[in-house]
Image (cartoon, rainbow, N blue to C red; front, side, top):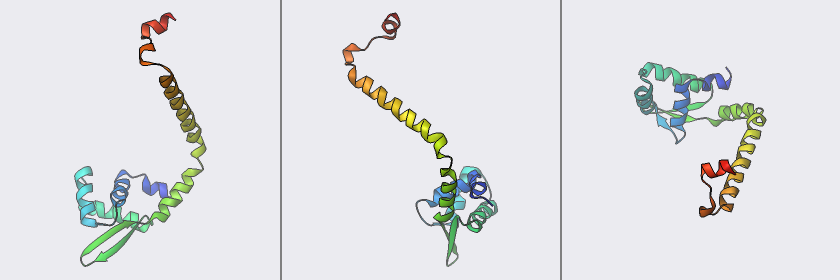
Length: 124
């Protein structure tokens, strides 16, 4: 299964977000996901299983707890795949950055008392 198929699910994305800060017990993940999405413990466990089997997470057994953590290799694969499309949005970000800089330069060049009202600008 392609990495983006796994990441396409909002519950699995949320689980990964929860794991960004570090290892978490499955019970803690279930508690948050149940509260936010209203899905059962078995359903959350199934999402955790999908993430684990797809290589996005690792699991470590500590007594009766299962501790999940991110395995970054698959996320890196997804990022590399997306990089081939970066040129589509990078030009737009560059143009936006230019416009923001232009606006800041214009604002600095105008003195507070020099700014014209919208009506005065129309008549100019």
